[in-house]
Structures are given as C-alpha cells and as structure tokens.
Amino acid sequence: MTYLSDSIIEWYEKYGRKKLPWKSIEPNPFHIWVSEIMLQQTQVTTVVPYFQKFIARFPNIHTLAIAREDEVMSLWSGLGYYARARNLHKTSKIIEKQFNGFFPTSFHDLISLPGIGRSTAGAIMSLAYNQSYAILDGNVKRVLARFHQVSRPGSETKYESSLWDLANKHLPNKENDKYTQAIMDLGATICKRSKPDCDICPLKTKCQSFHFNTQDAYPMPAKKIRIRKMNKTFIVFRNREKIYLEKRTLNDIWGGLWSFMETEDKKNIQAIIKDFDRNSKIVKKLEPFIHKLSHREIKINTVIVETSKNTDNFFALNEINFGLPKPVAQIIEHLKLER
Image (cartoon, rainbow, N blue to C red; front, side):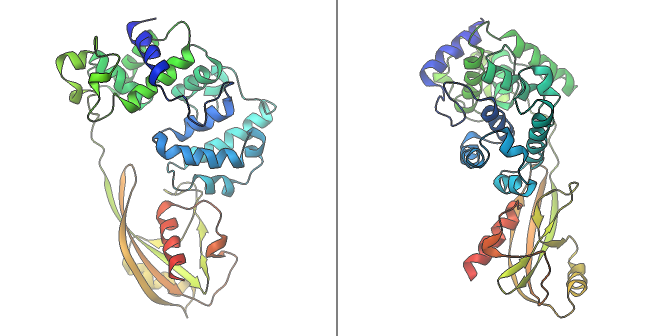
C-alpha cells in the first residue's frame, strides 16, 4: 500500500459511490463490462438511465448476443460514440461462441475482445474479480498527474507510459476493487477538471499540485484538437404520418444508425428531391440548430418534403424503435409535436 492508495480506500469507505446500479454485493462481470463501456467518454449521471434500460432489456450475455443490431443501437441512441455499442454486441457474440456464454476471467482474454483496451480490461479484472490490475481512465489520469505533477513530454506515448507506471506503482496488495472504484470516484467528484475541491481531498497532504498551487496546470493539456465546422441539410421525405429513413454505412459518422437523406451542398437539394420523387415538393424548413461531436460542430438544416412515394423505408413516427443519431431523434420529436 502507498499513501495514495491507503488514503483513497479510507476515503471511499466513508464517501465513495457505493449505490451505482452496476455495483452489487456479488459483482456481476457482465454488468461491470457494460457500465465500463458506457462510461468511456461519458459521465456517470448520463450513463445511469441508459445502463438501467439496457440491462432491463439485455440482462445477460445470451440475450445481448442474439439481439438484432438495430435494437442494440436503439437503446444506445443519444449516448454517442456508437462504435462502443457495435463492439459490445460483437463481443457478446464472441463470448457466446468461444467462451460458452461465460464472461472471461483472464486479462489476456478480455483484452483480445473488440472494444476492450488495457484500461477497460484492468477495470473489469479489478471490479469484477478483485484482481490487482491498474486502470487509466480520464479521472485516474487527472488524479495521478496532479498528485505527482506529471509533465507532458513531446511524445504522447511517453506521457501515457509514465502515467501507467504510476498507476501500477500505487496498486494496493488487497482491496483492489475498492481502490479502483475509489480513485475513479475521487477524480469524478473531488479532483474535478475545473474547480477541484482540494480542501476536502484525502490526498492534499502529499499532493504536489496542492502544495505548489498548480492544480489548474495539471494535467498538462494535450495538443488542441481542431474542431471541424460543417453544414448538413437533412431532407425529410414525409408521406402523411410516415417518414423516410435509411441505414448509414459503418464508415459514416453515424455508422449503423438510421437517418434522413442529407447533403452538405445546398445546391444538391432539389436534385436529390426530384431523383427520389419528381412530384414531391418542399413544404417547410425547420429552424437550424447546432449539433456538437468530439471533433465536429455541425449546423443542421432541415427541409420537410411531401411525397406520395411509399417504400419499405417509410416508418410511422410512433413506430420508430431503432438506433437514431441525436439530431435525427430531435427532429422526429419535433414532428411528433406538430401532429
């Protein structure tokens, strides 16, 4: 045990988040895996209702493995980073086939599965099996970087490596499940990205950033990501109470989800409409809105087009139960309210 691990476990006993829906007296590896995938790039408060709905529909590996992809994606709609859902579904099929439906119990097996990297595998081994494995999610990186004042060298690989070395250094020799949950909780609730609550932090006695008042400087920022600004026009073909949707290919930004026809060039709108149905016409334009992704900021324009065409891809508004990108779901909700 180190000062950091000992202090964090003691703090967790009093203040840790012990009532999260994926925590139980007897740890459920399937629940822990689903929660860890959902928590990648996403906060706990956002994840909780998604997790509860997901587990209610897919309580075990088998139910997830035999599900249709569209149903899996529908329960992920709005959570973002949709490759996570596709990998979750793909992995469940692999576990069903190669591991006879039993969740893997070794780090080597876990890390070989789609969507499970070193940190996620470590979290599962620790939280589900109380094994001594380190994790390095965003919360843990922040705690370690501030506690040790870890500088960011020119190489991102070296920076990650130095943090992994520290993560392993602080692993306790017992209660590793508590420690793992504790350091994640500390980063999420006290050692926050901005305005950390250092006065009530159990690590302040030996935290270098607290000692030198450099909390705002650590973790040192990575190279700023360039946000690409885009314009998209959604073309909503409507036949009475039905709208046209098509499934996006996997290399699309909304791969595997259902969406409207679209264009980035407004000059193409009329050609797309006439090609779809030469007798259709634009009846309305909705107010544009901004949709933000990690590396993109998209201005969404929407035109409503009346058509008499009625193919297999027309769906009643109240019968859409598959995966949709968030802006598409917003537009559909708007159309429902207009009825």
